[in-house]
Image (cartoon, rainbow, N blue to C red; front, side):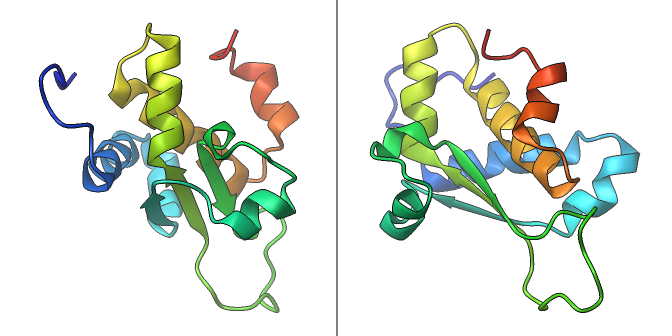
Length: 134
């Protein structure tokens, strides 16, 4: 765990590095498909994304999978890469509010949650096995 006391808030690059560490730690069965997903880190989700998702508070969205899940992909799908977006300010807000989890663990959790969508899991599927937020 990195100690942030007395330092500036983690940067976009710091959050990306934590997510890349989570990707590198994935079991071999998930590593190949995960490597094909682009990782992007921004402070907040774009306004049009928030509007489309009917989210009023930009701090409410920590991550987003943007793509076609592997279970639905076809050779006829357009060629853009799938992307996992992590939203730094929302993640940091969640981290501070929780106060009981290391930042690297939270970033890894958000990343893996979004990666699960790439594998075709719904939020309900993920919640059934992931009790992180309880």
